[in-house]
Image (cartoon, rainbow, N blue to C red; front, side):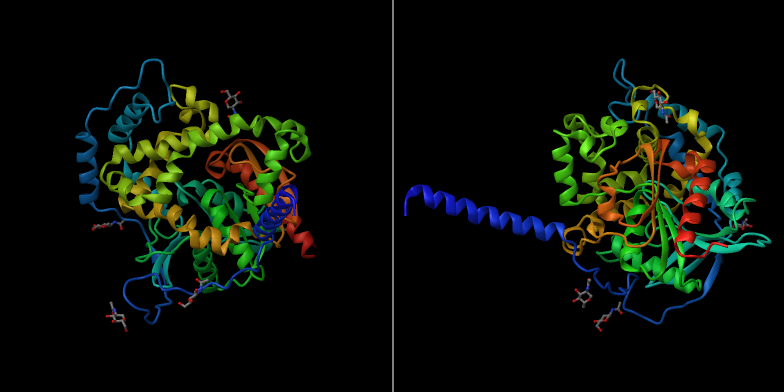
Length: 456
Ligand SMILES: *[C@@H]1O[C@H](CO)[C@@H](O)[C@H](O)[C@H]1NC(C)=O
Ligand SMILES: *[C@@H]1O[C@H](CO)[C@@H](O)[C@H](O)[C@H]1NC(C)=O
Ligand SMILES: *[C@@H]1O[C@H](CO)[C@@H](O)[C@H](O)[C@H]1NC(C)=O
Ligand SMILES: *[C@@H]1O[C@H](CO)[C@@H](O)[C@H](O)[C@H]1NC(C)=O
């Protein structure tokens, strides 16, 4: 056989092997069956199924200690001349927020706001899960259970303004919501796992069990950030329970989507709407932006416990780390603003409430571990639930300054996409624009109800 033939045959074999691998990656497997793992201390024991009422009552000791730490924080390194947030949280801005924290922020007053929402805890698979549960008053309408899930570095606090909008009947809708708003395990008032492995798919098991404990067999789910990732898994794993999935962070990270993104570098409008092309192309901008903003992701996925030590020890460090995400998460361009744009869209007290959830519970290290557990080889590559399509009715709500998936990619993971909406705004949409957000949830779920043939 001539040399040329040898080359041709070798190339053919290589191409076949590559195609086979790609095909294997592209074809999603069947949804795995996950174990009801015991995440608590010690060995499996009989579960106490009681639902306990819960109130936050932070001790004076913790508050005195916080005061001491804020007063004794070292002076900050001044920002470089002429820079705003490009090197991370601007310390002049941080100084202003810390001054507010020390002089105007009164936790005992804020605690009353937290406690105005009825809260409970119950033990699921060995760990105590904390959640808000609000039922509508005198409904006179069909009441639908809705699970709302926060992400990192958020908390239940993001939903305070949204909750009453969902539980109050709207004159033009024949239904209203009963909302269940848990703290993710390891975040705030929910206990963390004591052993490795509690990533997004395993959390889906926990929340399915929580809803079952509360007596709900079928319900709607809504989430952004990690809430969206966990609920994606839940919708794939338990399509018989999830009536519909409303997400304000639909992401499509499949091998095929990567291929489409690359092809789009040459033919941008093949998969992306003309007016969205600038959100993905040129690819050099897209990737350099991803690199600039994803350092935290890599650290949290690999060494969360190292970073966790200082964030659990220093309230000003914790605030800097969390609030930097609120700057860029609200509007990418706020990196070049002295004030980070925070006061335009939030107020310092509300933002500090969210920081306090992490501080008083010391939960930043366990919260960051969710990255390591979710993007592990076992969960992300082997189980691969995040590459499996959601078959239940879905709604994707895209905010301008959030992760983006183009129209040409969404059907890969959301073949039953009944609602797609685009808004200006950022990553913390429920927190930033509760009215718009509530309206969109009602609109999308009305479509889901019609799909199920439930409409009157
Ligand atoms: C469930 O547990 C069994 C026994 O420990 C284990 O072999 C299996 O891999 C687990 N399944 C998953 C999806 O983790
Ligand atoms: C758990 O069970 C194992 C095997 O039965 C035993 O060796 C171990 O001591 C138990 N641990 C606790 C904390 O009870
Ligand atoms: C909080 O706890 C303290 C004692 O630890 C108690 O005196 C106080 O009444 C409690 N406050 C609330 C609102 O439960
Ligand atoms: C983001 O900031 C830019 C200017 O920096 C402004 O033009 C735009 O309207 C802002 N968008 C939102 C949604 O805040």
